[in-house]
Length: 484
Image 1 (cartoon, rainbow, N blue to C red):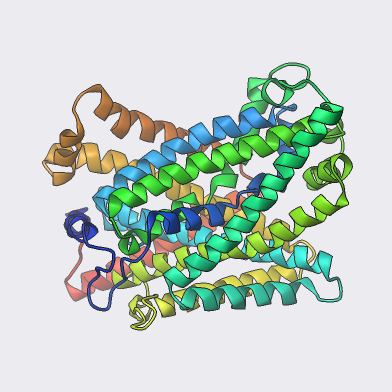
Image 2 (cartoon, one colour):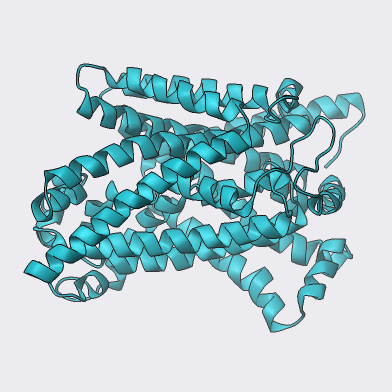
């Protein structure tokens, strides 16, 4: 019966979730991560200064209302965070949306969710590694970008293989560095604004230049939500979090709020200082990618531009570290459920890390990142395809909430019993129907706005996954053991 396996696993997971910090089944993942560690992984993957690269694009597209774009995007992504928070309590297992779709929709949908998330988790780190390689090449032009890119992959992979706690400690130091650089920018921007005033009205980043345009803002939101891709990686560590599912859910929501505040503050200040108007920037698309750096350079000085560039170079590599770790957990979970080769389901006895799954993820990422680094259009090609996988997985996440709390609940499954325990009536409808439906609407809108290349690659990857799923079901049918 669809979902039977998922239901059982959800129950088992709940029992495990209450384990102590060092709990874990023999040969399984260890519960060693604190709330701070989870928050570090999420913020590392997102990156505190994620808007830097797309600030100019959003400023031009929104007609100057870039800050309200991020405020709206934060609210929109809160729907996704809410769905993650619900489902991590239902199925507190490694694999994130893969586990949730299995629990809420059945094994087939779970595989599709995991397959689409795999495209995201394997290629977003590749993009981040490439960003790091390009930035370091700009600082040391004698070394080709692909060399820096490969070096970043090797260093962060070694940290991940050393264990989740070791990687989290190093990641915390890098995250602290990024936040310090962001604080330097904020203080410097405030000093300049106090001394010399703003280039435009103080409300312009919220209302736009020349009038507020809801259509322009929503168009920009479809791009801005991509800045948040990665906070969901926190859910991949559900089996390694001391304190269980509640701690993971709290870290997810906290990460989203913190990122939203950081994004809104930095874009507000940059928009006030930017020497060009939004209309001028829209007329010069070639300058949109460096608009933030140009603003910092003209308003504060080249020293801060260089500091931000170094921070982005190092931060991108460690964003990839968090992404690679999440990818390893996804491969581990799918292999454990015999959806991928079983060799990747092994956990290293010394470090507690899924070593083979991590190495598999690192190999794919290395090939993609270095291959892109050797092409002039490599960054554009990679960036155009990473988002559809994540967004499709988000869509299945929202569908999983509906499936678990409503469809399966009406059949008498334990999930709806838990829903009722949390409260009947309007609050339950809001949490388990309205919020997931709003989140699903946001996902569909963003996918529609995606490039044709991204849609094509996402479609091809989906078809490939369906073929793999059909082969697996065919093999099980021949063996007389179809489940799902």
